[in-house]
Length: 166
Image (cartoon, rainbow, N blue to C red; front, side, top):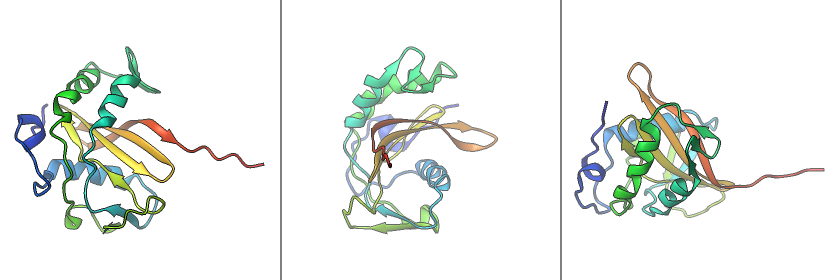
């Protein structure tokens, strides 16, 4: 199965007025449904910086990415295609109506209380999404199952705070 997302996969140029696709919103809904918080403050624009793609490629090894194991050959092939799309990432406005009730979009840049996300990049049956929260920055990887929709596969962390008490 292959998902074609309007701009990132067919080479059209993008600007901040372009919306993200319904399929990309489905990936975002899957991501936010896994979060326990009743209310999530999310920045109203996506992250347009593609540097996370280089990070993911650096963390890739023959059997996985960080602690994520490759379960099929499509995931490493999809990761290898990411650089082709990196120059096409840009900031995009998010639509609150497409995200669900627990999301509150905000223009605040308060890194302690607001989450930041990139637009999901969908390649075949995999989706890649950068998330930035106060104590972590990670690339979230989702897999599409025709019977269950977008399901969490694994995360590759570029930044994570470990608090020690005692």
